[in-house]
Length: 449
Image 1 (cartoon, helix red, strand yellow):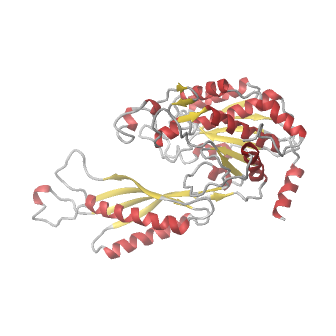
Image 2: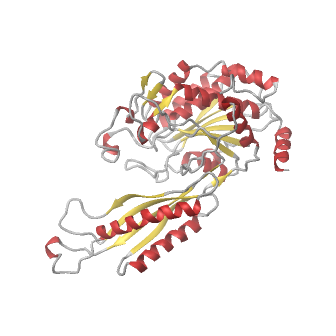
Image 3: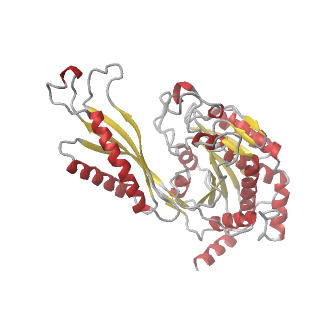
């Protein structure tokens, strides 16, 4: 890592970025992240956290607002206003957690019990902070808050507006059992934010991965229905027997193998789109004596930016048709119930070039592209609406006084990693919203040429 991560900037912008960076501190980052973790924000219930974020931004000199989607769900956003001659930039992070942090909704699916890190209460372990969503998404949201606060306190003279936006409903989920609106997740908050006029020329989304990503997968969901015969345990040996649940197991095993072949066919750019069978529903838990006539599976199939949801649907339907042909009597059908296309930002875009230059200045080496990605974020919503967007974030914590599994990776954040990401966001912002629109356009035209 270079001394200050500002190599390549001219003297004025270097000075402005240095002034802003002086306002970053481990104590302030710790204060920001613990404040976010301690306010529960499962998908559909982000309102209290959005209010906290807006209040915090307002106290640092930002114009800030809460943007309700309904009486429980809300976005937050803040704006530092430029003189109108430069491009506007959005620093974006979602704020809802993948799980809820309550036994009634999480157990037993997350495990036999909720660990300390699975609850919305921050715990400090030296330079690490744990708690539900401490890294993803809340640690990233805290870095956006810190970056905008630092630029505001430094009084950097802006040409374009710098917008900090925090979206509800960023997780890949529909409404929870206690939810109201069906579409509380899948980027609902980000879509609403844009529809209500919070729009910029470029965007940087803060999500995991210490690399500058310009493309990512989309996703399609299928509800797969497997048929069988409704019958009774006492009559199994006397009547036709075709257990839909057993048949669903056959379908699942087939799809798990097919997903691997699908990923190999569609790996391109930095993405390797995966698929999973995520849930199974069938029968009466209260009545173990009978079999159901149908069993339903849910499938998440990731798609690269190079294929459309309809192409993915036809491939999936063809796979099921091949299975039916190989298994006489199998009744299996599917319906596509969700579709979000994958997206890509041109690598010659200003925001990709600026964010990459910031990464290289901080690391003191050529940018390292990380391939094989299958995670989807609200970057797809931003790019899909026409805003060139890149993704940058923190790597998963590798060294800790506890084992890092999937959940702890989401729920553990490193303060030094937060400082590095914040410095990246500041440099990229200063490099962008202190220029004229003509200057940025000329740079993009030169990249294309």
